[in-house]
Amino acid sequence: MRLQLVSFTLCPFVQRAVIALREKQVDFDLEYIDLDAPPSWFTQLSPLGKVPLLRVDDQVLFESSVILDYLDDVYVPKLHPRDPLQRARHKAWIEYGSGLLMDQAAICLARDEEGFHAKLEVFRSKLERLREPLEAGLLRGDREFSMLDVAYAPLFMRMQILGGLQQVMAALHPAGVDAWAHRCLKRPSVAASVVEDFAVRYIEHFTEKQSWLMGSLKD
Image (cartoon, rainbow, N blue to C red; front, side, top):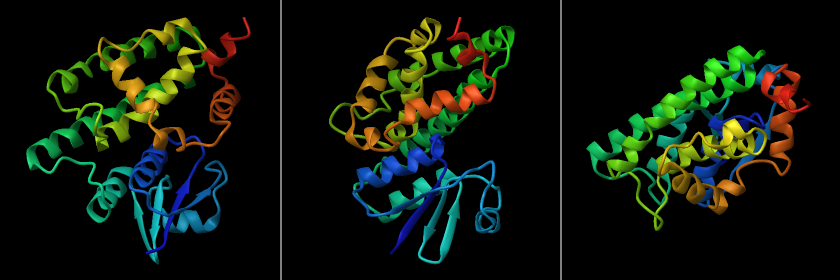
């Protein structure tokens, strides 16, 4: 099968698919598009107008969770737990992580200090809930890498960038999550899941969006 992943360079949901593909050592093509001016063929293929899209020969899959499930059904090593209940619990926390990614982006998109701090507090309180999968033993540990790790690695990568910019962003991880984040970020598949100048592009993107956070760096 020929796989082609259609992406936007900064999209964390596409990054999840890239990490999974690299973990499974599957050959694929990666095509970047500009979501602000998408090509006509993309709007025809994507019912939701979002990335990622995965072309499997002449078939198209959309929605990152669906793509991750498909990749895990078809290719080894399996990253989801085999036990149905554990797999369902992982998927629930993956969905929770999707919400965290949106909250993280909302912080960066806030255009004034009041909005930034309001969104930051929402994000901080939601991060506290990450103690639950840790305390419940849902993570496989240092020897194995799961789809839960795949899903949260993009969040942790962006947290690392933001933590290097603002002290208030550097201490958001609750106890135990720092070790999880470190384990994910040192994974070769994660390091190779973004373009080389990702951090620069990430900052530039939100600066162009008139982000208060990025603008405050000049003060």
